Image (cartoon, rainbow, N blue to C red; front, top):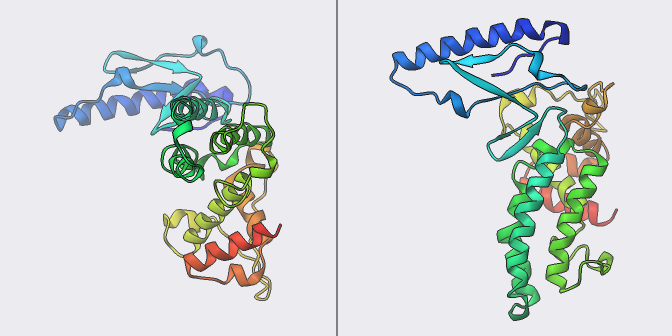
Length: 264
């Protein structure tokens, strides 16, 4: 459940939320369903700090729903300022925990085996909902790259502070940031081909020129909007040659994108 309003009307919104929660509770009981209110959390998203202790309580079935600064939903951490530091920190714990175990057996593994282990055990953590947190800032991307560099050091059997610039393409065939860009462009192509929810396609607006297929970049006055998926991926799309843009076969499109970024 999500409601937005100016800060001056936040208390009115909380009244609406409580009314909705009461309606949900009544409907659930009528249909013999159990909603565990104790597992619910309330997250106030705003650019400035808000003293949530002064806000009215959010209540469901007589249970107070706690205000939190970050919440985990389907494996992703969302915080009150809509930055991805908490999620990247969580991802770092997962990856480094597995890396510590893998280092213990690294002596017995070939480089090929290490690459396979990174692909199967570690890379999925980076790729899970990567399109969702594509709006990360440059500093957040740098933090993510530092985590991936640890994977490269494992594959190359190098110590923590050893340089790995010469091995940046060992695991993925190209650098990590370029790999992510291709992932975003693949999802954009799927949106265009109707292989994603239709409401996403409604957010795409193309220019009038038939020779140069360009997306019109959405207006983005705020920094948050500037980093949003459709602004970022739209800019990437516009940088592609037309022969890549016109390719409708996903496999060929991916190959063309890889060759393009390998040459950048």
